[in-house]
Each structure stands twice: as structure tokens, then as C-alpha cells.
Length: 114
Image (tube, rainbow, N blue to C red; front, side, top):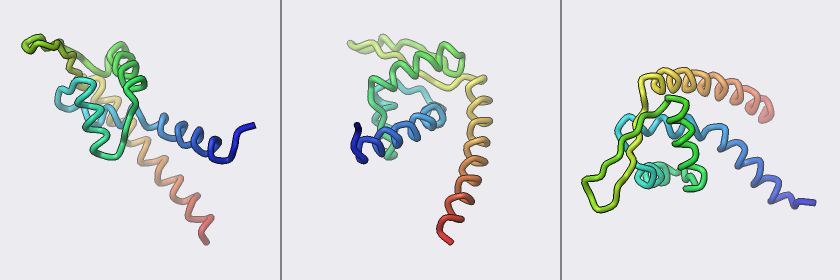
């Protein structure tokens, strides 16, 4: 049986997982490679494990929400990702939905404080 702390940690991970796509799409208006994107998210207090981020980038590219291009001009080739036109459209819809859900949740949480 898991402890209260383990339960809370797993529930927090679930909450964060639900926002990960929106977080990543929001940061890819300019080309970023995986490590630079991870750093950018970390700087904005949204850390993402490499083992989570890289598969997500590949999935979003496969879904045509991102496009990528290899930069081989330096000694270490890097794959840069940027949001696609379809990705921008999806991002705007997800952002709108997030704001609606967030407002609904705020109402529910405020009821508890009365």
C-alpha cells in the first residue's frame, strides 16, 4: 500500500501530464532542440524529464503538430523542432480549452473556501 506522499506525488504527476502538450507547444514558436527546450521550460518552472520530453516531441511531430529540421553545421548534429501551422491551430484551441477548464476549476475550488 502506498503512503500518502506517494499517492500525492502520483496525482501531481497526472495533473502535470495533462498540461505537458500545451506547455511544449507554447514554447516552440522559434526552433528549439530538445535540450534547449528542456532548459527553457526549467527556467520557467516547468521542468520536464528528458525521458518524457523526447518521446513527446517525436509524437507531436508524427501528429503534424511540429516540424523538425536537422542542423549539421556543428560537430554535434541537432534536431530542431518548431510548431507547425496545424500545431498553431491546435495550440490555440487547447489554450482556449485550458482557460475554460481553469476558470471552472477556480469556481469549484473557491466554493470550498467559503
